[in-house]
Image 1 (tube, rainbow, N blue to C red):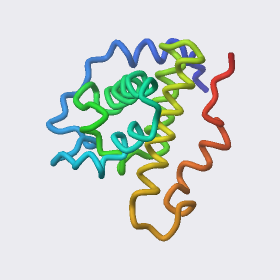
Image 2 (cartoon, rainbow, N blue to C red):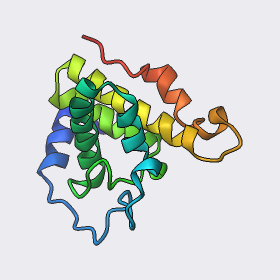
Image 3 (spheres, rainbow, N blue to C red):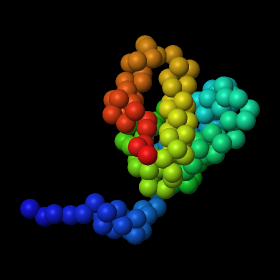
Image 4 (cartoon, rainbow, N blue to C red):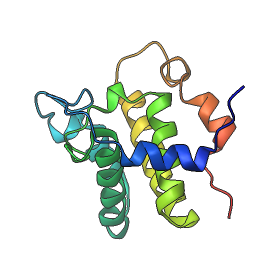
Length: 144
């Protein structure tokens, strides 16, 4: 059996050349009106003083998910799945202080919840079913 070090693996992965993609799968083809965009609706619910930092957080998350090709208003939040949120969490843990990473994850959770609440689905729990296991496992918290 071959043993490997995850720290070395992450270095190897980060040094490899990115594969050019013609179109990011998570970007919108057509811009949504702001009243239908989950990120915009989430930001509108916040106090005025919280909107700018949370928009910055969502833009950072959108950049992670789209290889820097989309802002939070250009990302298709309906296509974000568990594996995407796990990637975001991993990137945030490596690059930010725990409190900042938690704030970013709260913005992600709020946007995803807003998407689920805004759409006509059979039920909130069914729609958000893929997110609940992550919520229970990660609890959207990073240990300090």
